Length: 270
Image 1: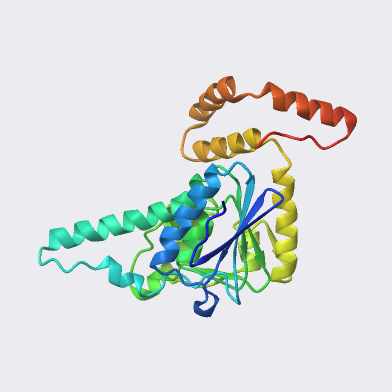
Image 2 (image 1 turned 45 degrees about the vertical axis):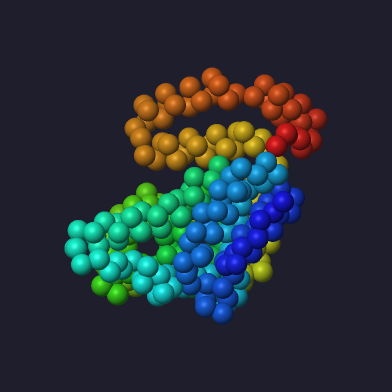
């Protein structure tokens, strides 16, 4: 049974799940429930065999306006002991990091479809996706610097693995907007579309193409890419050899070869 959420809208069609941030009246600002629901949602998607790819989008006029200011209250602890306040703050930040890391840890590829506003926590969130697509009016900003804090839930750790280091530093130090075309030029987004509807149509087509492939091969590819990002080439080579020794599917290989020879689409078990 598909779960329901208060801050997210989840739908599944043709083995592709679409997760929409659903606080349009608040520009999809990330309040407390949204953080925890993102983790619950993507952990469910990770385990759901009927889902082979996921689209992450936003309802309303904006993709995500970042952290809802009410969450700042949760970061504060009223203990008189500075050490206990610091420990409580650290544990809260680690929890928020885990909430978003669930997107990255989801075994199914996640395609972020971003329109208009994507700032602060929205950038943290989309850094966790496998790939990103944007509308012409989209812009990205590491806005934490403008409220006197260092971004702490993933942007400064993941973004340098996606775009050039100097660009990350400029964005982090200035808080300026990076428009969609610049985001495409530096490699943050794969493609730019004229409007949200066109983007969602095109991204859905890409997601369905991914969903038509062997789920084991796709999940293995994501596992290898994430592992190789954080390890040496030799470690990665050793891991893929070990992985395929255990996960290589003769059933899927035979289905794929047979379909190629017949010039048909292969059908794979979930």
